[in-house]
Length: 475
Image 1 (spheres, rainbow, N blue to C red):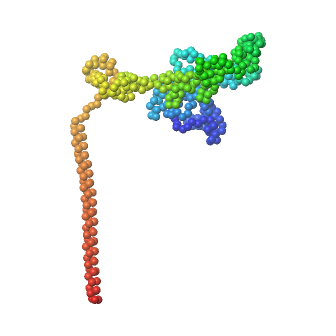
Image 2: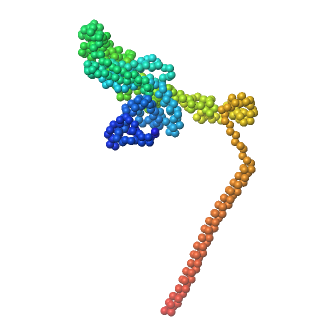
Image 3: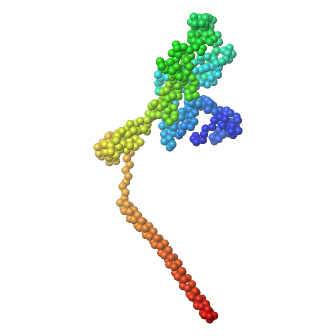
């Protein structure tokens, strides 16, 4: 399905009186016609849910980026399509490699009272807190993602213990899933051995309670050992929040609280790291697009998807467009860079450097072609041996065109000359006829004027003479 219309989402249908939300069902009949006009457009969340339920990957092939829905719909990719759509095959291959090379976890039916986070461990083996996907994967790579449930959000544990909470973790685009059932333990067995005013949780003034391996600090104190007081700042604490001497506290993008940085929230993306030194939006861009749309931004560096390289992932490693007709890379006269041939041989040009009138190997290739012609058509020449001919010339299709008939050429030339002569003669006759008619009309007009002048003069002389005689008689 292709359209140049703007996208329609939920609440757009209310302008036309469609007030019922979309029910997530298909309302098409056998003729692909809608059977109901009572539901609003689906929302992005509903669209993403239905795509995930059916394990469908959505590929946006656009000529210009106007709306970026890839961040809102899991498992979607976007590729730039040429105006003439000549790169549609490469686009599908690149999108497939992109989909195949990354794994992302999604959470369904996430309980609102639980704070769920992930730590992804990708190919390099380094844990990445807060991330739930890995990219640039190859066959045989092993990655992992660990979920964490650190605490309950503003809800009494006793109330939560009375109900069962369940949620599902599944990789996007796969049928596998993990169903998790949460049981709330509000009173652990180790809490019976809690140590009040424990020396482990002691500070200068007050102490905390050591319970189940952690310190429960008195109000106003925090830290793993209750060593910090809220609002307290000291050089000892601040130095632990600097990446190195002379650097800003928490890289200027967070607050130092008890020897650790609490990173600010940003409207552009996520800020993370021990010193808030990393983010997912400060990577190189190409035409305003982060990592060219072919990679993920990790701590200021683009992690390119499979099939792309470069600082901003705008360089394709696909070489199919650099293969010339003879099967060589850039006709042997250049190198394939970012999916395009860069000709290095002086005088070579063309999409695959196939044109080079001044190249030394141009005559060699012509001679080789002549040998193949003799081999295939006349079974003669240096490649006349049957095995050699079949081995080296099997992929070359040579078509011989029969020479022209001399008599037909002669008749065609004579006929063309006669036809051109007749056309010229007819044109000359037409011009002469038009000229004669104009001259005859001019002659007739001059003759008529001459007759009119003679008659007028005769009439004038006949009337003037009697008038003069009358004048004399009166005198």
